[in-house]
Amino acid sequence: MKIERLELRLLKLPLVHFFETSFGRLLDKHFTIVRLDGGGSTGYGECVADREPYYSAETNETAWHIIGDFIAPAIVGAEFAHPRDIFGSLKSIRGHNMAKAAVEMAAWDLFARLRGEPLSQVLGGTRERIQSGVSIGIQESPGALLSAIDRELAAGYRRIKIKIKPGWDLDIVAMIRDRFGPIPLMVDANAAYTLDDAAHLAKLDRFNLMMIEQPLHDDDMRDHASLQRELKTPICLDESIKSVRDAEHAIAAGACRIINIKPGRVGGFGQSILIHDLCSRHRVPVWHGGMLESGIGRAANIHLSTLPNFSLPGDIAASKRYFDSDLIDPPIEVAADGTIGVPIGPGLGVSIVHERVERATLRQAMFSAKPVAAIS
Ligand code: OSB
Ligand code: MG
Image (cartoon, rainbow, N blue to C red):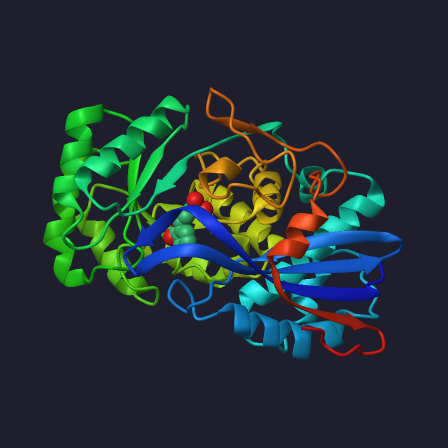
């Protein structure tokens, strides 16, 4: 597979509802998409970096810089036997996993399209449908959260995740258990606590949560291990797992019992598959995280979730929870049983609506074997 051309677009799409976590409130989704052309076909990738460096150190601007100034020169004009070779070919670029993953994803889509196979098949997936869960942000009031949960349960979602932070945790979980009983429920702290909160967090044990996601800072591996020893509730790591090695260390240290995989965070599908397989060998279940992706990234997440150890429902929900008009048509939909059908066409298997991409574009740049100036 020869990469002949790379196109970058920075997009802005309004969210239908604000999304609030322990680090702030998001009203619009700003993100970058990558298009690769080669061999008469096209592949698309979506970068999960945000406008601000809150969830991760990367932002849209760092991704634009790293892709434009370092990744494009390294891969445009190059030939790859397989998309899994891309991550390794970029090893001289330290970090910037989200930038690398966006380009690698486009290469997987291109590779699968050139073979005429769905991405799930090329990735080694085995399922035709995946289990869908929802992530519900911090709301204006406890009542608003209860209504949101009510709505998502009625829509059929297989598990509810709520965001927590100090001051929006124990009482909120107690209220949910009180109202809804033993629903599949978990919480995500996005690193809002420290080990000093261990006794407080241990009070969550009585609520029988499926897991608590990322309670402590992303570089507090040892503290997560200490916390896990004090908690009955399984810890799931998100922000802390940025590489296969992080996953090895986390498992060896007992820092978690479950891992959330987001390809953007770990450098792409190749690395995600290695983490998936490692966890499988250690009997650590994984599930697919979400980053409020448009239909492009969402479709890719669905394909990856068809691998066998994605045994828990992921943060991959219907497009309409996020966007009034997604970049793909038809949008991603969730069936009444809380599952999503895996697209069966070649590559991502979804149709991108180019006028919508055009309308959402804030900036565009192109890189071919001979450099072309940026267009704004
Ligand atoms: O921590 O999983 C997270 C969204 C943005 C950044 C981080 C996270 C999230 C979510 C949303 O929880 C998941 C989704 O619905 O896409
Ligand atoms: Mg998380």
